[in-house]
Length: 475
Image 1: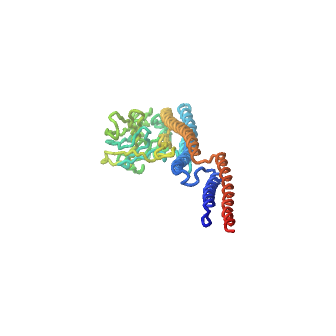
Image 2: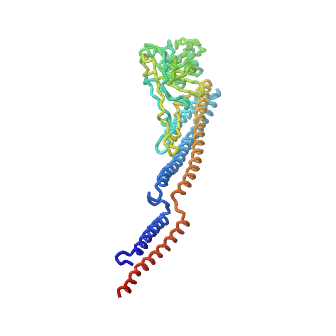
Image 3: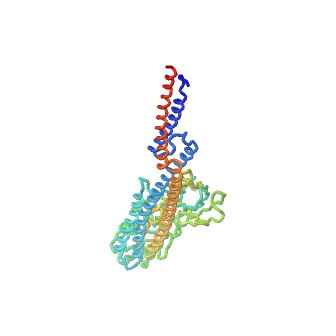
């Protein structure tokens, strides 16, 4: 028996320390609910759970992103739905205007509403936004860069791949221009000279007693309604002159292309002589002429184009479509070769997954009245109204295609959201198995360690009493 070293007490104390440490761990797990409270508990499990936690949080955020994307689409769809209603009203008015029982005053009212509806389309485009980002003005569409400023794309279908597309404009479109023999004089219209003067089947009444200046101003006022400028010029239309100077009067369409025309109908020979215009005279415009250059990352050998005025429409297989506009005011004939670079930038990217590259790109083209080519509809004759119906039908088709695409986007985002929820649930269950404490099991362990702690304390007390027995030997 020894006095200096009480090995029994030391042994009991050592066991007590271990038990006390186990109790501390159990209390930490029970109070936090976590099975791993520090890296030493399960180093490998902690590393795995950390990655899982990052993935779970990413999936939860991606689910919210998907819902945000759905909200964006629904906002755009709301604007497009109202735009569709406006287009249907415009078509109804165009059908009404195609009826020749209407007077010019009646058509004035129809034209006024058509013009206001075109402005309303632009208003819808300007105000349809999500989180201050406009959705229908082309801001959420792919960008393109043109090597020639005066040649720009107005529409790029989703089937057009990123790359460089080369084309050449060899001839600009022309407006229909008709030079009359009418010029200023001091004469007035006689009874024999009075009559109906038709341009493109639109009637202008020339009445008895009108001065030549009044005839000129009447022609300006009325023909402006059908998109024809009336002005005096000494150089064929390049420079406008004062009517009083005696320069001949010119009729010229505002729009370009072979569909544009100035066609005259006069049944009164006296009126023909007065205006220096012959019955049946006709001038037409011209479409621009272009060529496209096939290349590996550009147009294919099967791509073709059609021109309408200064607008070029290039189509190819599998839905490829590109619309290009040429600005005749800024076009430089020396710049015949144009390279249009279509970029991947510009679309709205929705992050739909927890990892890089898991995304959905929303491409919403512009639907302004200009891009839909309904910004200058004319309602003053059956022919003009019929063309307006065709233009509106094409606009309705374009808007319908965009709405269909948005519907496909929304379906994809709904499927993505459902998939993210399943992934998040599965990962959360696996994460819980690693990190969460089994409360029943841990409480059992805690109770066991608590009993051992009390037993260790009791044994330390007993072991400290043992040296007292040595007093009996020393007595």
